[in-house]
Length: 190
Image (cartoon, rainbow, N blue to C red):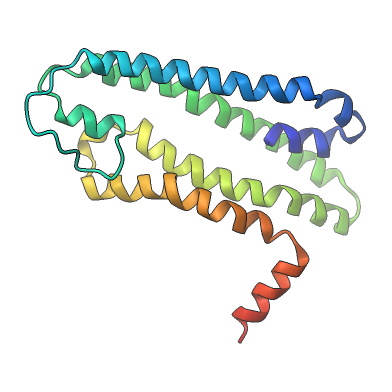
């Protein structure tokens, strides 16, 4: 999405030739393939663990940290693999988004008219809000060691990551529509 915004704002005349259908399909397929291959590696490592205690996960989803807490064998290899894999999977896309938005903001600040800058910034603001909530909670969940966290804090952050971000996604993107924005403001000012 940030690459799409980057092309639309920084290279608008080249957008159609650069953002081809083939590129879109390859971006989608590569992200699915990478996600699936990483998940398979983690599943195979967890499969080799011994589980001898209670079989109830103290969480509302079957994530890796609550499952590892149920294991009575050494989980350092799985924890190390999760940390090593989470660095490129979480940080590289995050850095890519940051770099594209640096270019976008430098282009926005180069626009001479105030209305043009405002319109271009509104194009990006909804995506930035969604990315911030998604990556903020994901970085806390997967990059910070889970042993030191309270279970309730982990559950709350997971709830933001899994439920709140997708729930707010259509609301945030629809607020770009002037009619919806004026309706929301009408109900808020009553």
